[in-house]
Image (cartoon, rainbow, N blue to C red):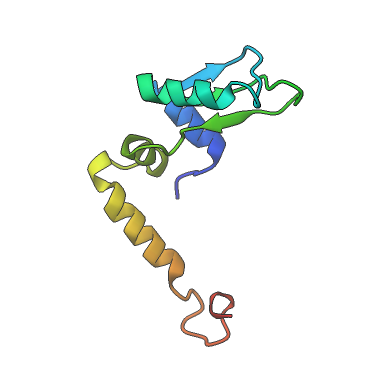
Length: 108
């Protein structure tokens, strides 16, 4: 199965030109959400903020699943396969993996 960590997703977004990295200090109370909104509205890009004011060592991301293209990158499928892939994966995840046992954890 493909690695579906957030780090891998960010690397895939960056590789496909869908991620903007911000290294300048940004204030989460004053302008981080506005920058994120504008980046997506004007460029359609996800954001990675690497220098958050008053939070040394923290990083934040936004818009990483904001549209079908980002979901396709995350799932490793074509854009027109996103809905079918999500439907199938949700169906599989919700099935009883213990062979129908009435006391399976997912049934408690």
